[in-house]
Amino acid sequence: MDKKFTMHLDVDAFLPATDEEKAYMVQMRPSSTFFKDGIKRLLKNKVATVSLIIIVIITLSSLIIPTVWPYEFDDMLGVRPGEPVDASFNNLSPFEYGKTELARIEAGEKVFPHIFGTDSSGRDYFIRVVKGTRISLAVGFFASIIVLIIGMTIGSIAGYFGGKVDLIIMRIVDIIYSLPDMLMVILLASVLKQTLAPALEGTALASIGTNIISLFIVFGLLYWVSMSRLIRGQILSLREQEYVLASQAAGAKGSWIIRKHLLPNCISVVIISTALQIPNAIFTESFLSFLGLGVNAPMPSLGSLASDALNGLSSYPYRMVIPALVISLIVLSLNLFGDGLRDAFDPKLRT
Image (cartoon, rainbow, N blue to C red; front, side):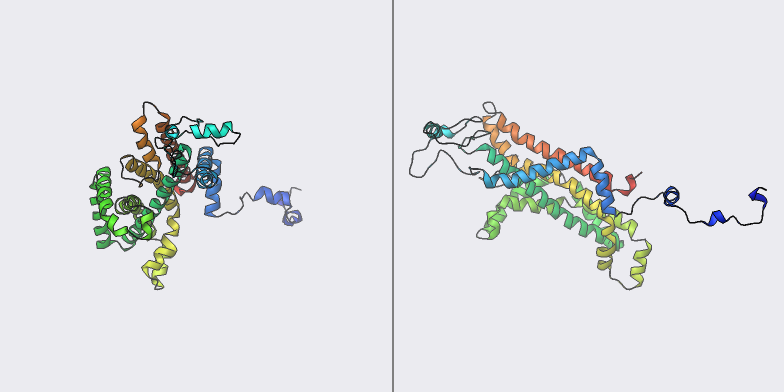
């Protein structure tokens, strides 16, 4: 008799499932956190991974090489105390030596080569490029942190409280957006350079230089508006969630809700925006240094090196090409890495 038409229970249907049957019926991936899942997606993006490796190599090189390199970035090789100036060290070609070094080589000494030659003042050009890369990266990183802090604070306040607070803040943002960026950056950098010099004299900040301090102030005044708009948009959509209402009903303060609930849920936007802000800051610093409003001499940056190379462009074109290539490589790698972060951490782009 067919079991479909019988009232007897099928005992075999109540037997425990085997491991193979469980694996076949339960199709679930291992549990993971948002951050781990984003990292896995990021590492699957080969372009973003290669860009990250390039950024790490450039950063580590700019930190390690100056500690082991035999030449200093401000050491004029042809100038020695109590000795006549040796002009043979000026404008050396790559892997070329000065007269004093040639004499030492003939005497049997080993002299470390000048890989990129020297500049018009007899300073090793390779270590100046490495030092300039470190300064440009540091300026871009810290300027992005300043933009992140200011933009995140103002954007979260505007998005959470809304009303007149949001109205006033957004009108300020609109006014800043209407200003011509580069013109305001040049004007502010020029004015702050003159006004900060007396105030910083004799302080610990004087070693950093007035131009760098003024550059940070410019970023803090002008470049936070995009970050604040992004954070505001996220907060406006998140503040209507049930967990925010529950926190408000429990008597939680607005600042606590922003720090504990709203900002952690905006972390993907924060990471992506900060990663994309760093190349913008580096490019702005290089642009201002090229115009003479960047780092103070003799401290080099990639922009100031490119600016100094203009004087001998026809005779020594590689001095312009090398810092320009480094700037292009850093900005391109950071932009591609930022795009990879956006693809990996933005929930709207997940398939």
